[in-house]
Image 1 (cartoon, rainbow, N blue to C red):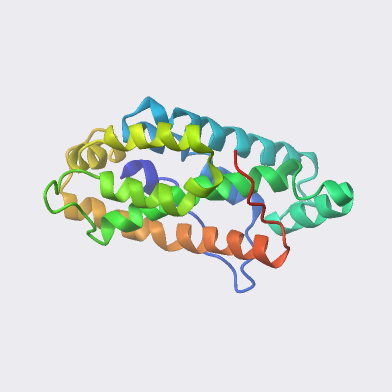
Image 2 (cartoon, rainbow, N blue to C red; image 1 turned 90 degrees about the vertical axis):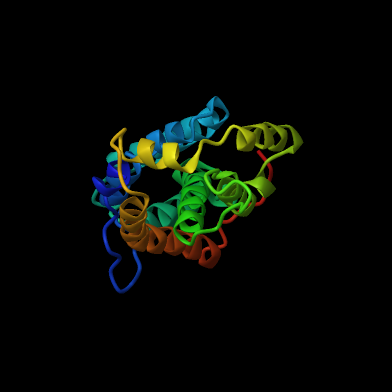
Length: 209
């Protein structure tokens, strides 16, 4: 759980604008989350997330004053790229990044809500499957979907997953899930705000990777 709690997301202001720098700082610590899932099949998602963070950071670093919020980046790129937008630049990178972040959120939410396979209560396959189906599946072609199906069968035991989240420390399940709940408050609000922004700006694309 230390993996998540050490780098909390900031509470959102009333206007739900997501500040770019604190957002990038917080998400940059998330790629190792996929190591906790124990399967190399998740390596491409981890690499995608890291790559998309880098692309957004390059744009932000080019003009931190102008790109103080994620919305300012999208607005500037819309103006700059015209008809090519939103399939360009940081706008496209953030579009894919938010899906990876939603995957993490649905998986963790499902765990804290106690969703499980009653026959195998210590497996997290149910939770990982739900997260994949909600956040990523419709954007993946047949081959990638097959790879993920294999990954789901390699999902770790819940006890091993929570231990990995706690950086190898033995923790009580309830204590760990309490911390996950705390982490999810600002994290979920941030992701919801980004999804909302994409809807409002008509920046969402549904093509398959």
